[in-house]
Image (cartoon, rainbow, N blue to C red; front, side, top):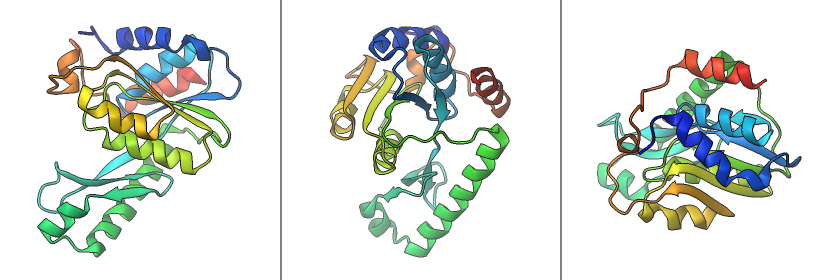
Length: 208
């Protein structure tokens, strides 16, 4: 168990030391939970640091349940089986994607963080933990389509059952723990508080 995200980040940085100072490598966090880890890893490895938004597409019947996901650069996926079983029209999906992307634009403006170009770069994608892997999968695929030459997925906790699907879309996966009995990412941290926007803004400013 990790004390907090900072401790996990320092351990993760040690696993990523071969990329220290690499001129064609960039660290990218999935906000908000991945930001404090990526900030520390980027500092340890002396690499540039950015963020990339991926958000779930909520079910019209239960906003907590995801039926797909969308990335800020326009790529998305939907669970076709869920759409058919729940009789969700395509118009709903299109409306939600547009609304989510608008919120992403607003959030990036709030964070005052413009995107770094990633074409031809090695991207190290970082989050504070991975559960189903759907957001990370879409992030990896979306950045590959944008021109990243290599994708490395890094997280302190990755369920054993999720590893194979991540390895299928990434050049490598770096994980500190790969539990077979997985309940939730928060169970592997003593302090796993929900980050707010102010904390993220401070971390992004410090990384400049």
